[in-house]
Image 1 (cartoon, rainbow over the protein chains, first blue to last red):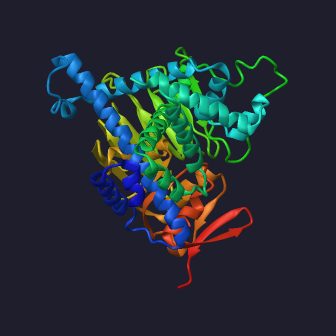
Image 2: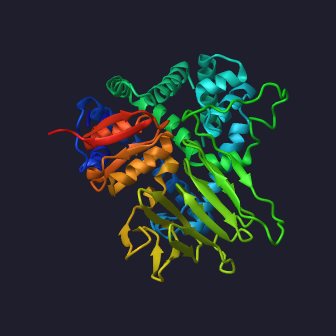
Image 3: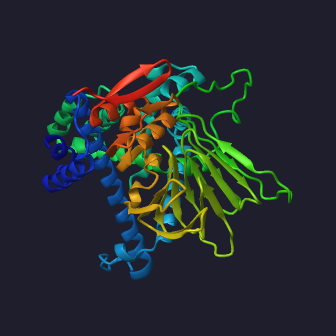
Amino acid sequence: MRFLVARTGDRDEAEDILQELWVRTRDVKPAAVEHWRAYLFRVAHNLVIDRRRAAQRRAARERRWSEEAHGVMSPTEEAADTAPGADDAIAAREEAARLASAIANLPEGARRVFQLHKIEGHSHGEVAAHLGISKSGVEKHMAVAMKHLRRMLAD
Amino acid sequence: MDNGDIDRIEEAIAWHHALARDDADWDRFTAWLEADPANRTAYDEIASIDAAVDAHRDTILAILPSETGARESRPSRRWALGAGVAAALALVVGIPLLQTPQEKAVIYTTRPAETKAVALADGTRIALSADSAISVGGNQREITLQRGAAYFDVPHDPTRQLSVTAGGYRITDIGTHFSIDSGGGRVAIAVADGTVTVTQGTGGRTVLAAGQRLIGNGEGAPMVSPIASADVASWRQGRLVYDNASLAVVAADISRYRGTPVSVDPALAERRFSGVLVIGDGTRLVSDLASVAGLRVDRRGGRIVLGGKPS
């Protein structure tokens, strides 16, 4: 719980997530306490990230809806409920295209490492061997890539 | 942005990397988050970008030119495909539009811990899970899941006669997102959005809508139960989500991600498991399942057998 409050910065949300964590793991019996703890942390951590993603998608949908249909000033409460699935598919494609173009615009070294590791799924070790650089070099490039992406994707 | 913010972002990136490890120090991470509320914001930004990239990996892969092979100028430095479960390598395969009338079915397979995206000419996209196989034939209108699991994104088009077959079930009237999982002696068909019609070999028909899942073994009446849309093909987000699944099914899934056979003591095969397993590189799945379900892990040669704990 302390982790969730720290992670979300919001006691209510932390409680919601704890509840969800409980629902998802209630039929599971803890055997080895050490692993159990790490397992709960990992699942809780993933739930928080899922929620952030869902909130972002909702915000993007409401923004699009209000801009297209009602002008920027209108209320958006109903918009979220009525936006059709096709709209989501378009939004997903737009988000993907935006990410792809941001990745394509990374500095060359960082771009190659990021693409090999994150997009094409090779391990750090494989990327290092392929490019003839050290594993810590791969990690540095990954950090540079994340920093650039963050700046490029900031609204 | 001042230097403090840049440091913070670097710390967030380092944490993001560290938390993916088995021995992640969650207490220190919690302390770091508590040290300054801005740390949380920085971490959220990094984790969101990472999650967004993961969610759209297949599409991005299709958009960007491949970094391996095609662009490699020196053919002597061939890309070595990592053996075992290390790499979850994804490839996009496009099928040419024009095909001869007597075309043979094209078969797509993935190795353990590998995923693949297949794009058909009509806009249908298929994500193939680890150690899975589909055949695409009949002018791209007949798809068969031969083993493993796949997720289908089929644009709505009433004039198209696409059908997907898996373990005695035939899926038609598709304009939707749905997944099929086979393994552990059963087939599960789950709809994330839209509807599909499922016909059983013996003639029974079921219309499945978004949020519904059909589970059956090809004989007898299948069982239909609810499923959260977000949990359909959750492996695409790096998780295996189970709701009252038999251990045999869970073991079959884990085998596909590990690349080594994992079986369950027959006495426990029907025991139920509900919970979430994080896939990662596949190596933690057995120990995670064993520790949360209270199972004993026996390694017999190359096989792993999950048995009950002596009580």
